[in-house]
Length: 280
Image (cartoon, rainbow, N blue to C red; front, side, top):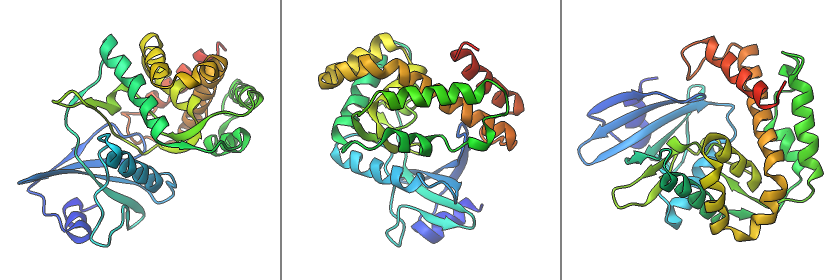
């Protein structure tokens, strides 16, 4: 992709400097800089149905007061332009320091996640239907004999919880998605995994990536109304989260998907980590 040409043609931006960024498992990104502005161009596959809705959520939350790296509309007023077989968006660059392992930073993760869920609440949906959307890896679950029983067991336990609280979810709240700004405000970026769903999925994801000792109490300080639901369902959704990891890495291995990693060994490690979490 000719990134400079895409920026000129679709956003009327003429960068003085471009730098490819690393780290995206399912996307390609570049930093574009000129006098007075910095943006990130992000590209995903044409079949990524969650890309544009996630950008719309980022825009709404940014307008509500959280820095999100919100999308900049193209010349035609679109959040996403189709370039060849890729979806492309331009996002405002968010500087700042990635949150780390300190108690203060970990508490900030829980607090901001609770704020997002409160600001983006939804009417509950059907957990069983949502899990079918979340786990579209049916043909890959027999890659190893433990995967299908682990995934199906996690799904059954989640459905058995009954009705749950829903919101728009970030989907992948690892610490590196949270950036402390010079004024102390915390930004939350990288909305490519955003979706509608049970809040327990985001809480479980935050616990998987971070330190539950600080994340969960901080989240519940922001959302005390969800204390009973989190206590009842968090362990179940931790298994759901690991089921997603298992299905995702089984899919990557089956299809030899190597985007965002150095080689096949990293996919194998992701699947092995999921297996350990199930104790099999």
